[in-house]
Length: 171
View 1 (cartoon, rainbow, N blue to C red):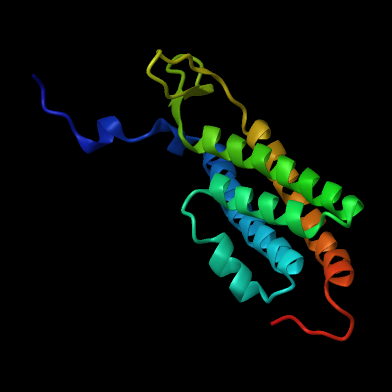
View 2: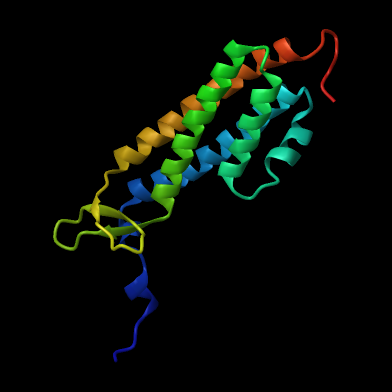
């Protein structure tokens, strides 16, 4: 059996910097979204961000983190149905972009040897089907994530105004 070299296993995706950059930016933007979701939790709990982050970031998985936010929102925003609906919409869309991020990051990436097309396939026990995956698809997820970040930031003020007793600062 011929000896393998590290180069023979290195990803050919490195030759496609637009994909590599997009995947990196997606992970960065998802981390920013997570921080803003913790800010929403702080507003809902009427506490400071450090306390909310300690709670929100305790679970290692982001699905569990989002479940914390969703459960707290249902309880705290019962008497504010409009705000609850806005938070639930952000939560639902956040789950979507986070799931897309998982799919992108945890897939197999190849470059078609004849065409040079970047291909992606989900890793699974039932075989894999590699399909062309343009970097523009990743860019759309990044854009959706950035929109969610802005919407989350814009919702913090209304949440604080509705939930914090007048004149009281966060603790």
